[in-house]
Length: 197
Image 1 (cartoon, rainbow, N blue to C red):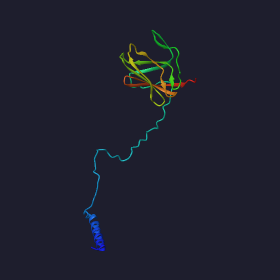
Image 2 (image 1 turned 45 degrees about the vertical axis):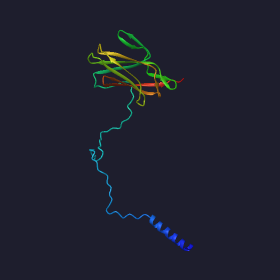
Image 3 (image 1 turned 135 degrees about the vertical axis):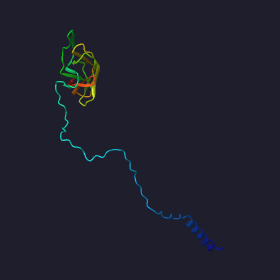
Image 4 (image 1 turned 90 degrees about the horizontal axis):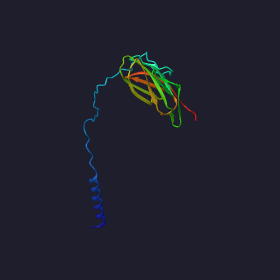
């Protein structure tokens, strides 16, 4: 077979092989393709706008006073809170000998000095209950806390907390919160100042 004829046969075979390798087109599908999200009923009511109240007032910082802020919904009353460096105990009760208007803190980080709080409580009835005292920093985080038992043998009693030195983030206006039983009774401001070395 001549070379020219052989080449023509090879070219023909190659074109047939290339045609056989091509995929055949898929026929078009009939109909429409539609996707939808299933609807779920979660039982959540639909609100038609935001309710408005004309009696709302802007919440601001509560004013800091030197007197306790008391609640009248409890059978217990905090008559006074005195912070002191030392106490004198007698048959008449506990008497602060050197009251402190400001608690000093020193160092880095700041650490408060040791002090004692004398909380005078009046109770209706001679029954015992729990007292909790927390001192919150200006951010509202608890810096110090104590709890104990009140046992009334008379209408009034003095409950004392001896605070050990504690670390605080910064000086400023702190708040002492007193709970008796399950009721918040009094909130009392405490100022902590940084002592310059």
